[in-house]
Amino acid sequence: MTARRPLIVAIDGPAGAGKSTVSKILARRLGFSLVDTGAIYRCVALAARERGLALDDDAALEKLLGTLHISFKMVEQYNHVFLDGRDVSDAIRSPENSLAASQVSSRPVVRASLLELQRRLALNAKVGAILEGRDIGTVVFPDAEIKIFLDADPTIRARRRFEELFEKGVDKSLSDVQAEQNKRDKDDREREAAPLKPAADALHINSTALPMSEVERLIEEAVAAKRR
Ligand code: DC
Image (cartoon, rainbow, N blue to C red):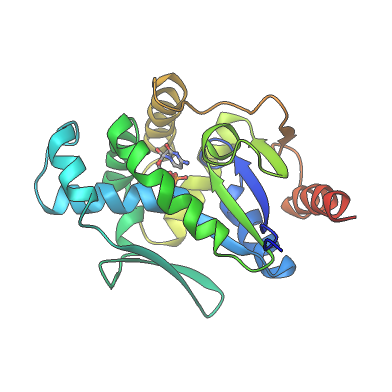
């Protein structure tokens, strides 16, 4: 008898739509593993920057990818990210590293190399896995049982990000946050390799005017319908 594959929930969408917030809450509530694929790209960006590599040097990136060890661990209900054994949960989220992550994520060599890691992390889950990213429903798990495309108005997304940075003590104006977000959105949507776009069979949710509790409810309902 072959073991049953864990239930795969793909949550794609642009930055600031609420993917991380709802994924964390739902993973905890459902007892599913959580794979933050953006954090994986962020780790590659951090490692490349720390080694002084050009972010478009495919040969150097490929060599680097072969040496990196990226893992996740839940510590006090917070999903920590480890790069070669070092907790980089905060370091990967600086504004500089966010832009670098967007750049390395446009390199096909990086995307191809990270496919197996993303799939393995999800398939190791016992009951189910929630993967949040940009191309989960289209490329990483085109056969995911549940596909969500979570979006929100760009000004709302920038405000959420601004408030998040403000709480962390990062001094950045709302207009700077908006400008950086616009650039990342454009790069993520227009890149040739696995651009940000909804899967044809994704359930679209727009969180502009919805409380996150309602977004959670809609996704939980989709999961429950598949489990029935
Ligand atoms: O979700 P995030 O902001 O942490 O993602 C960081 C960068 O990685 C972002 O610019 C988009 C990119 N990314 C991607 O290309 N594909 C994914 N599956 C996840 C993230």
